[in-house]
Amino acid sequence: MHAGAMGFADAHLHPLEIADSGAYPDLGEAEVLFGCVSSSSQWDAMSSFEDSRIRRFYGVHPWNASEWSADACARLESILEDDERAGIGEIGLDSKHGTTEEQAEAFDAQLALAERFGRLVNIHCVGCEREVLEHLERHRRIPGIVIHSFSNESYTVPFVRLGCHLSVNPRILARSEVRIRKLMDSIPGDRLLLESDAPFTPRFTGMMDFAERLAGAIGSDAGTLLGAALDNARSIS
Ligand SMILES: [Zn+2]
Image (cartoon, rainbow, N blue to C red):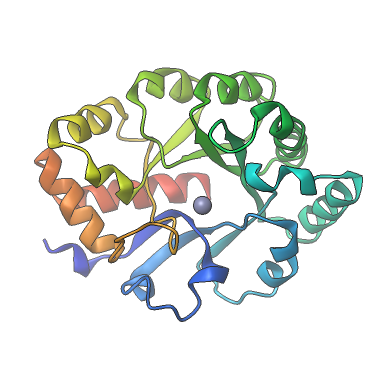
């Protein structure tokens, strides 16, 4: 079966920035979209963004952690009260951008909101898996956790144990097939998600193309990967 025959889920993208950029040629074929923002300055635009396929995520990204405040927290609470399907993201920790100490308070507070309101989270985790796991250990009642751009198979088991879904990004295609296979083999079939992170992924040319190249690297087929990722995204949305 050709992958173009089916819909798909994208577990992490930035719909406000895609707009009409042409960066996502097959966006029209998507069925489920986990749409993230990175700054509280985008929350209003996100709430009025019209696309029934989008599960809206509102959050403060670790690069913008200094935005986090009592006011931001109160605003996010009221958004969650108004939109019972809203998730929280993109949030997380990034050891390559500032320090994780500066980011920890915003991350933890947003996880606490997700737990309290029973919402999905979409997590950015660069070079600090252990710390992200420690935060997640303290918030065990979050109903759905997407680890965006998951790339380190040494942490598959602990993330899965905490109920996370692991979202694979096209950046992985820069690796050797052996390394791609190692990562993909580590991920249980019911925890795999696929994402574009559009429009911020260089050389992304559509989800079908990504799935075909990923499938080619691991000896699978695109339809199988897209189908599994769609089922898994639906199971938490
Ligand atoms: Zn992102």
